[in-house]
Length: 139
Image 1 (cartoon, helix red, strand yellow):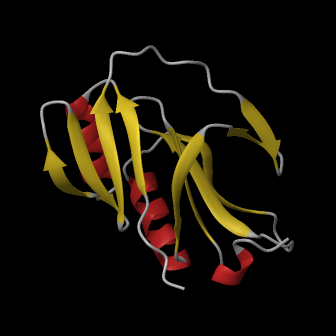
Image 2 (image 1 turned 180 degrees about the vertical axis):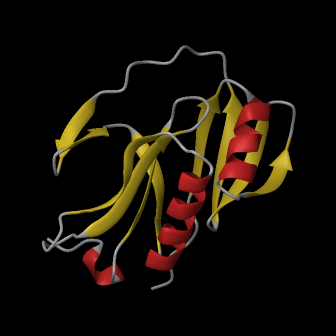
């Protein structure tokens, strides 16, 4: 089965800061744009930032393997080498992590490398990787 790219649209406070973050910090390429939205290529997936004046809500967290994970978050499951490259780049850029790059569920089903950080509008992003793709949905 071939996995198709997903599309996600999300609200942002500042398009220029968002473009800088996704393009320069994360390394996304830019697709179509307007005065109120930008399409990004996030590891082969289309994510669209829409300018919005809505106020942020406090994001609740849940305990996952001893860390407080933001309930509302999204990201991409990368190959392990891609994940390590991104983690290294973000650490070199001085990224402030919610949860620093590490391996959780060590030695258990679902062992994974993971990291969490915020974009300029406060959206929690998680990027993770598994040694084998079969482990992604393992129980």
